[in-house]
Length: 212
Image (cartoon, rainbow, N blue to C red; front, side, top):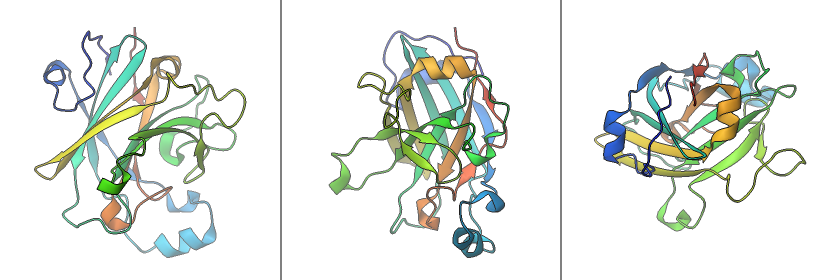
């Protein structure tokens, strides 16, 4: 995927700048049940459908030292209850040869920019968070350990819009890890199906990024 440079900010997914940016349809599959972190989750979800979001439209641009990724997908017709819809993009280390299916591993963690929808009472919370992911549901905030590299300027941000039964979300963060990785994975959580943590839909292959 080519990542063109833009001059103006395009954090709003409805920004007209996105009309000129080519997008790609990225297929998604359920995060493998055998990779879930414990037997309780593996048993509870083994016969229950999850990760049914089949594809997501992905586009990306560079603005200065920021990468902006636009994700668009069909939302479920079912209303959310306890859990809310979410999505994210994640970046491996440059030398990591593993597949994105597990959203990282203990030996090869990935940098995850995670967005979650918010209720009106949650509007004060950040729209997106940077996490270190080392497997399905094994997520922790970046910056807890030396070398995570998170700082105030690098923290991701997001703007989302739900219209006509489709989510459109732009997630923006530090360009450096994306440029170093040269690829990214995508994950979507359907809140109406109680999806969260390692229960969701993920890209089975890396999306290549060509960044200047």
